[in-house]
Image (cartoon, rainbow, N blue to C red; front, side):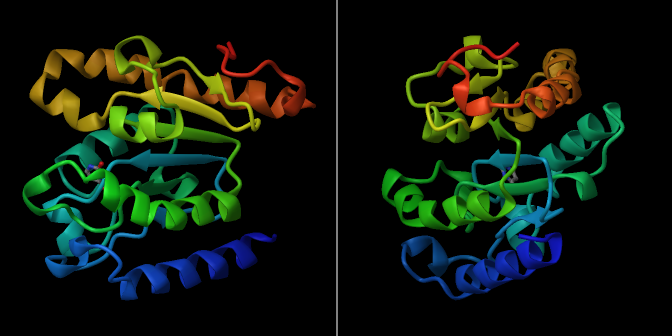
Length: 205
Ligand code: URA
């Protein structure tokens, strides 16, 4: 798919999300938050779900956690236009509660379609909920900052959720250190000619 075709396909999904009433999260939403960024991105960031600011603006990561995410992107010389940012669920769980398993399940198809269209070289999961959806059984305390290649060849980098640094500013350096690994991981992926031949569920670097 060309970048233009990817953009069109993503817009079609965003339209479906806008009209979605499959779970009760639609009842209290102001806007759906399908995701935003470069449809042809090498790196796809996946958070958990929209918060209050995201619900009001219809854009992912535009609140305090988003500001820190922007700062981390800047720290490696990137902007949001270089990546695509999405969430596991596309509507705000009331009061910022965790999305319920049924809600995640209902929304899962949208995220899968986005992954299939963007075909990112690297998926960066933000927080343990996003990580465990793709990589069940991993613990964020040991998994963060370590790329993992799944059986199907998809490569993930689990990171702490940026909001965690807001409650614990001393953690900022750890977040930035994990983030700083992204360009080298991407370079390594790009240089690896036959990724499907790599061992599964192992550290990549
Ligand atoms: N937290 C998330 O997980 N996603 C957002 O879009 C904003 C905050």
